[in-house]
Image (tube, rainbow, N blue to C red; front, side, top):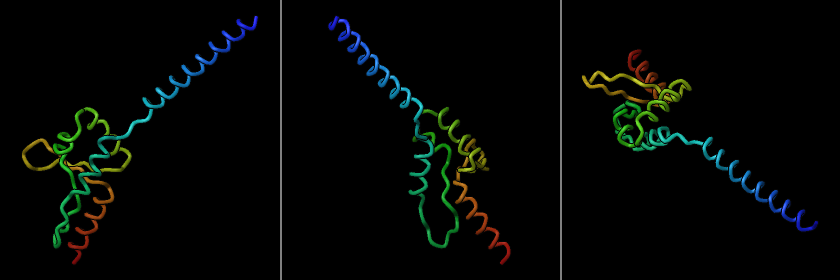
Length: 120
């Protein structure tokens, strides 16, 4: 009889370990970090700071595509960041199909600079 209880206890322990492993695996699948946002922040920091030039940092979408493998992921994450008002996305008038991306706080600073220039 003791042997039967021991086998059941071992089976329960194995099931508990399997359950914990499945739980942590599902957490890993649910936790995702935005590669797009990370790359955007890195590129923003690398934007050249030039005295007497009053343009805020922006990133070209083509630059972003070259840094993140999955373009579909980039497009989805950019759309989400746009909806959440983290970034602004602009169609560039370069004759090519490219977009500029600015963080919203940089965009607001740029607008403020332009407004001051026009009122002076």
